[in-house]
Image (cartoon, rainbow, N blue to C red; front, side, top):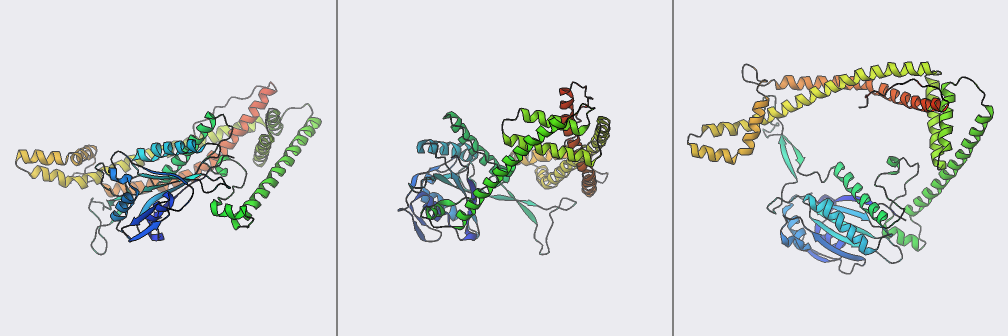
Length: 487
């Protein structure tokens, strides 16, 4: 059965962890740590199918040696609480041969990690013969490499500036600053892209082999699956369960399987009830002018006629109940009432959206002005220093050395040309105050906008259902176009 497990953690000293020890365990090797003066020996560990280090082009060739690589990292990480490496734990598929699994693993590591400049220490495991649990581990240094192969910085400083563009000092007279990561490797968005990429690789292989199974990197909730996910047991728990030794995780998964079975049974009963309701509706139906409730019923019955599964029928029933409750709560019984309500809400939503868009545009303009003001204040000393050099040759040399900074300065000065006050200053305080005012106004406007937009979305859905039913009855439906109000 195809399964998905993709877990990323950090190896860090604050948790008592060592990069050398972690690499030794995953690769099944004996490695010596120069930082701790200790040897980690896992050379007798079973189940390590293969292990290798994949390097980006700018990495020193000697880093292909596991002990050299991780001792070099431990050496450059001086902080006693340093974050050392990302640790990936990813399940392989029993539907693939081990050769196919290893090929997929190398492809993922090369395309998603090494191509981004990451060093990847890869190890593929097959823990035992009784429980088929193939998986692979990847260790990647958090600290990036520079183009020259030297270790770079994990983050850089962004100094806090006052309204005049000067650095802000704390009570001890030291400059204050924030730390910004130099890579996106630790961001939630990057993790999401990695998880999706691994699922896509496996699914492409399933399709290539003509298999129907697929995996999905999203949670059951995000997939819209009404089912409780099971917990990851791991090799130790599986070995105990195989020996009839009960565990907490095993007990929990047994309860989850039982509960999911009960949910499936309940769905079948609801589907049977849905069929019964359809029969009752047909018996009680009488020729009359249709109201909204009847038209919604027609729409759901039509959908269920073409439904391919009971699950789809259950979803249709939920749609009908939600739509019917909505029109009853809002006292919308006729097409005229529905049309009038849609037109009124569409106008209100369009007006509020236009206000929010205009506010967004102005905030982006102010944000850019503040950024350019920061660049101008930060880089003007370099510009002044260049102009103070009297010798043309030395001035040209200085300009070339600071070409990038000067280019940013000229851009900032050009964008701020019309913003300087007569005394040569920038209205930074006024810009920030305007930003705060816009933020408050925008928050208030969105508080009005969102419930109206959500209400309109429900109305448009009801309208669509009703129009489909009217077309089925050969009755002309009023034409209303969906306004571009989404935000």
